[in-house]
Picture 1 (cartoon, rainbow, N blue to C red):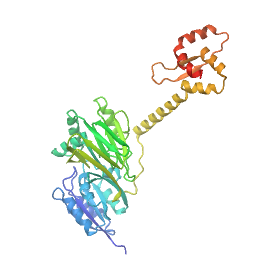
Picture 2 (picture 1 turned 45 degrees about the vertical axis):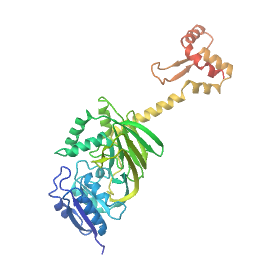
Picture 3 (picture 1 turned 180 degrees about the vertical axis):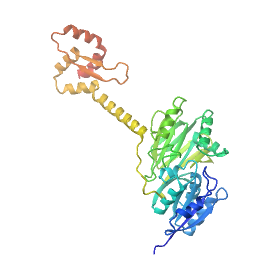
Picture 4 (picture 1 turned 90 degrees about the horizontal axis):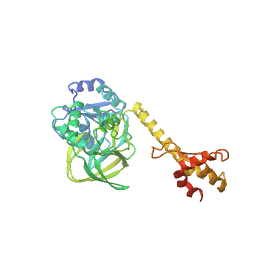
Length: 398
């Protein structure tokens, strides 16, 4: 007979916007009691989840389930790192970034059925100045909004968006110095986010390529942008197509130090906390055990991702074509086919003309004309394109 696993559910009754009254009933209804002996605990104050989680870890409980949002998950998981007690999730928060990243069902029945499968993996977590986080941690505009959101009387996506739109008009970007293994760089940034998983929550993908298995932090730096550019960045954020560009910088590293001009608030898994000027980030590889979804599907690209991938491919092909057909490369190819004297006559009797005069990186082509019977035309072309001919004359006559 198999020994039953010990499992404890820690429920935060005030997290998120969902009604928690029926969770106990659902646990009793859907949990596989042939596999588990369960215990249910309700949090009563801030930090209570940490105390319960610590106690359960010391008792040797096999699985501790965080029932709430990313803030509750952080409290519970912080006490379980580097131990044999696994973390499981029943997402009931406002954003549920970790559950969405791991593809844990957002409904209570589906989440409990995932727990019944008892698929446990070792995953990464990260720290900021020694404090663990599991989703994202950052500073700048998103931290400022998290601070305002925590003070709001209501929760939910609409409240968050309201706070974001209100504060965007008054927020001023700051200057940061970022140090990693590749050196030191200074940025004037709208926000800096260090991501262990791919999204903030609510399908806002701040680090689309982030993985909890690769031993790396994905750092996204968003530089100041104007009101016209804001909708494009928002579209990329919610369509999982955010990538390095005009206002976005991305770094992958396992250690990072950020220096800022003054102390202030940062967000840690969605919760605002006060922090100093110097912030040290570190990734701990496979430092926490979690119950994951064995039926999770590989990420499938959406329409916007397909469009962005096509645009990138088109840009790459265009650059390769331009390099291959540049005047210097064409001349070098001709040099291998014709004697120097013949090549000299071709250039001065032909034309070296741009296909597009307005583009900075214009494509060029050589047009060869027969000398006999077209002398006047040759002279006219030579006069018209004399600047181009003279530009490459020295290269031809080497």
